[in-house]
Length: 85
Figure 1 (cartoon, rainbow, N blue to C red):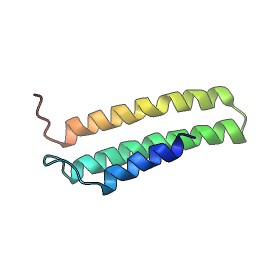
Figure 2 (figure 1 turned 180 degrees about the vertical axis):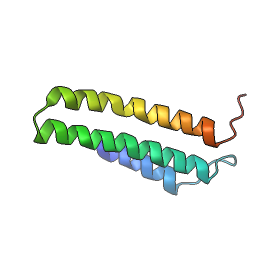
Figure 3 (figure 1 turned 90 degrees about the vertical axis):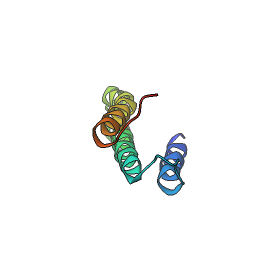
Figure 4 (figure 1 turned 45 degrees about the vertical axis):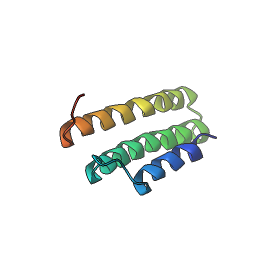
């Protein structure tokens, strides 16, 4: 199952040391985006397994990485000072 691997990298981001330019804002943004993506994955599991709506579960699981990417990229643009090099 992929969920333990996702949780490992998600927690490693929170606990591990970052680069010299990484602040607490970066970790907060990635935590929020990761929590939203994981929440969608868990919701898709509940919809598919418990309720039997497999098409809805598939669409939710496909939307999870998109939501993560939009929240992470948008949060980094809005709340940090990004230097494009």
